[in-house]
Image: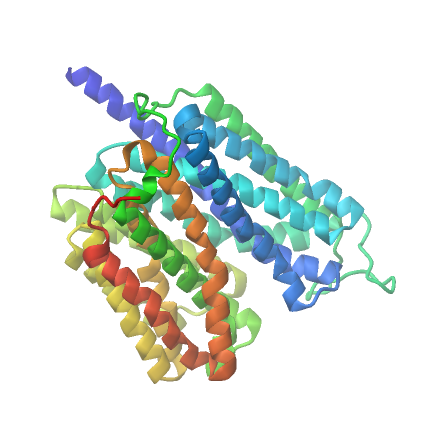
Length: 481
């Protein structure tokens, strides 16, 4: 009996390690969009609205893909329950690989629409991965430690988003730009980067061929490796039973609010720093790394805090070690890029200490940590609006640390006890990523009518809702549909 339990635990750990690789990969590829935008803007001579179609096509696919999945699950039965999490992940990987390979003909043809189509297909592949991988990680072990596992996986996702701009930028604008003939603009002149180097079709073709190859290898690897099949005995239903669960419905709204607010802050930070401190785009970009990198720090800390470690001493030491290691990756990346002095980021260390204290107060409970972090973010939003200079800047950058556990905690609370409707519920939660397209527009309209600094006040509303979800909305109750 003990041997069986031990073997089961080993299989789960192996499966978790393998699936976590996916989180890193889609974090890395997603952040490559930030490299594609300036590349395509130059090549196709786009205005800013046209260039942002890159994000619209990619994130719009999440909504479309999730809606299709939900309709299928409601009419013919949940696809993931039918084919299993493993096969769902393999399908998502192959779709993602196809999308990456589409970049080669898109660059040859020289069609912006072709690039957008490739990005839309890539978004569909990632939608399938999100629907399959997130609940798989959540059910791959004890329910009480599900949020800790998802936080750890999301931490590696953040690691991908942290290093992608540096590595991806080097590959696209430097290394592979040496191969092939320079691309020409509408009047026949070579397309140049801000640094004066030429841009070629190979700049994106070769990196995305590599990414596509990695996805294919991962799909083969997943097909060959034996992963534990979860919920083999779950019955297949063809209805909208997931909507009967109140905590899922309120969780869908919570994901919408969280993703929208996080993306809104990240999208406005460079302009905000220019307004506050007259930072150039290149200088502001370095500080932006601490906003997104803060999510990585918080997720690694959260993975340990919510992992169920019985010894408080071991847990706190682990959290400190994880924070130091993650911070070293962020600062090291920025230092290598521009030699930023350590003294310029001392405020960030203060917020890291506050983040650690908040985790201690959260007492390793997903819902409690969620509402505590939400109220801290509200305080930081009020601070950035009511202050000026470096204090205002670091107050909003510090929000990244407290956004860290939002996705993982909301997701695990929302799909808890859904049983045969877990994947259906997951598709609805992924659909709510649409918030990343809607809330930034609302903040932008608010900024146009008042000011960018005052526009951060509108984001208090999403975080008030997240606090409510952590206090009461997560509680399970069955509704009649």
